Image (cartoon, rainbow, N blue to C red; front, side, top):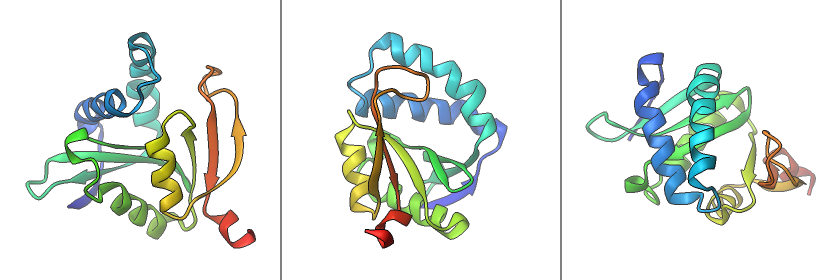
Length: 149
């Protein structure tokens, strides 16, 4: 696996990875929720974040991560590549670039919560609504709280 910086030409394939990953891991979202999030990811998240692509041995994208300073705003892996270490590789890359990281995780996505907890994050807060004001609770995690605990 290797990591490279994304460009605008990568956005269509990354949007496909996002949709596949969300459908496989966010079973609390309805079809309408997914369809309403697609333009937000396409038109706002991907263009505004520092996006890194995880590629397989054939240099095909299998995942991506979007950073806003030291906050992981997006980390999505294609379902065919789940549980193969790609997410951990992406976090290690982000740590080298940004130091201690922060992330908000949907509380209703227990696999993602477990992933971050197993990679050294700790919960320091909770919000009953997501960033769009929808009733999808978020857990706020970071790595800096580890040393204070």
